[in-house]
Amino acid sequence: MAKMKCSCRYVFDPDKGDPKQGIPAGTPFEDLPDSWCCPRCKRKKDKFVKVDDEPFN
Image 1 (cartoon, rainbow, N blue to C red):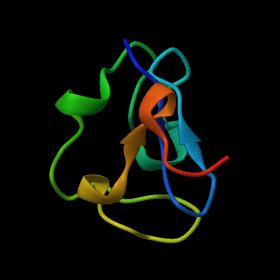
Image 2: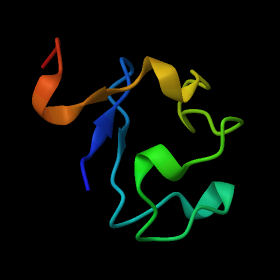
Image 3: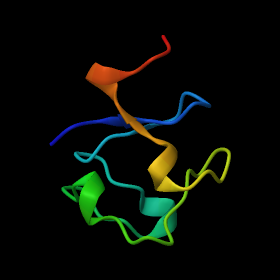
């Protein structure tokens, strides 16, 4: 499962999930609900890029 990164530098790690938004550990990014957004900046999940493919450091 790939880690996904937002332009605000928040990284969604599937191994950790997002407990604050009710996303359990082990949830792949592609299985997140469409309503899920970055907990830091509130961008939608379509703004995330795979950590390996990131256009920023």
